[in-house]
Image (cartoon, rainbow, N blue to C red; front, top):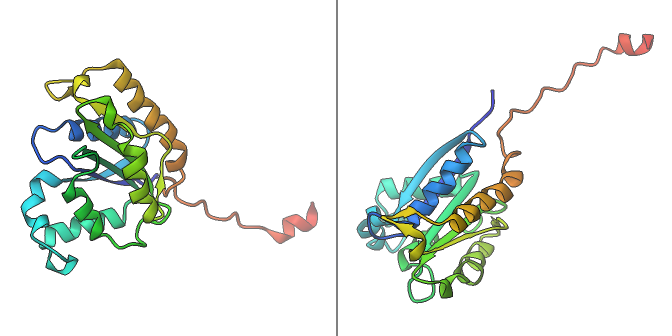
Length: 198
């Protein structure tokens, strides 16, 4: 019986509905069609007041400590943020400031972001990838950036964006399928008498 891939997804959007959350949900939906998954979703808009009030990990309420533990024990992270002032949100950074600096070594991360126009698209390469590089995480090859014009009523309404989402998941899968999805096969029992007869 195959194991489920433990996915922790972090949506940095403060509002609801959220285009950032939509992108993350679209990535999850595509992954779920390909491999068995177990999902832990963190929406920063729902925990913003509690998270923002805590300066240290010890000061966090228990549910948010569990969110951070889910980040630190994930087989895959999916992260997304709206662009504010050319970068990720302050709460998004604060959350990852509380993650242990060695917890994400070699953990695959799918990066995504949303913004008002194409001019912010490099946030993935110039902001998000270096952040997770600090953690020595494995940022996956294709990130997904989406503009406001690619949504209608907070739903994806762009064939180009659909194609980018498909490509991001396609390129991610080879990095994921070996991560505890199939239990290790027991080593075959060698019958030395049979070998001697061979």
